[in-house]
Image 1 (tube, rainbow, N blue to C red):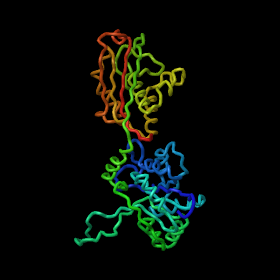
Image 2 (image 1 turned 45 degrees about the vertical axis):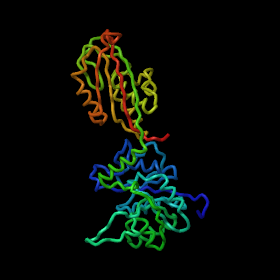
Image 3 (image 1 turned 90 degrees about the vertical axis):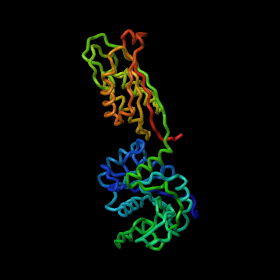
Length: 385
C-alpha cells in the first residue's frame, strides 16, 4: 500500500425496507441462528475497523435490539434511496477523516474474512475496489446470446479513498445523478475501480430463497452444545389446590416448597440452558438469600437464561425434560405442558419432549415427599473459540 497504516472506516448500509422479502420487518433484522442478519454482518466486520451503520428512519428500536451489547457509534439515519443513505453515512464520517472507506450492504452477512483482507490489500492510489463475481451462466437478451466475457456481478464490500468517494457523492447529489451502486458513481466522475474476484457465497439476501441459502452458509460458523439441569423440591405439608409444574397449574392437594414458586421443571430447564452457555446456574443469577426473588414466577428465571443465550447469538433447538414423582400423574398434562413451553419459548412442540416416571416407590420421591426434574437442552451458538 502507498501509505503506512491507513485509517479505514466501514460503512454498513441498512436503511432498506426489504419489500421483496415479504416480511413484517426489514430483512436486515430477520433472525438467523438467534441474531439479526445485520448483527452477523457487523460482528464479521468489527475485527477490521470501526463500523458505522446507516439505518432507516423508524428502525431505531429494531437496530438497538439487534446490536445490543455491541460497542458501536450512534447510527446514522439514511435517506429514501440507498444512494442517499450512503451519502448521509459518508457525511457523518467527515469528522473522522478516514483514508479509506469500505461500504457494505447489511444484507450480505456471508462474506469470508479473507474476502475483506483481499479488498483492503488491493487499495493503492486513487482506484476504488469491489468484490465481484465473474458471470459463468449463459446469458440471453430477447433470445440473443450475450457474450459473458468480462461480465461481472458486482458485490460489496466496495472500497474507496474516502475524500474522493465523498466528493463524487456530493457531485452526484448536486447534479441529480442516480447510479446503481457506488462503483458506478466513482467511475462516472473519472475514477477507476478494480475487481476483486469473489464467489457465490457472498450473496445479498433479497428473497426467501436467499435467506435459506444464507442460513446454510452461516451454519458453518455455528456449533451445537448440550446442557443438563437437575432440580429437586419437596412437597409442602400444607394443603393446596394445585401444583406449579413447567409454568402451568396442575390440580393437586400439595404444592412444592421453595424460595420462588418452586417450579422444579422450569428450574431444571433454566439450569440446562445456563450450563450449555457456561453461565453458572440459577443460584448464581437469582440467589435464594435475596428476598427480591421470594415467591417469584420461575418464568423470570427461564427468560433470563434465554436472554443470555440470545446475547451470545445462540438459539434453543430442543428440550428433553423428565419429571420423577409418584404424584401428581403427569401423563394427562403432558400436552398442555408442551403447548405452554412452545408458546412461551417460541419453540415448536416437535422440539419439546416431556417424560414422566416414578422411582418405583424408592427414595424420597417413592415416599411422595417431593419431585425430581432432569432436563437436557440442545442449543446452537456461534463457534468463537
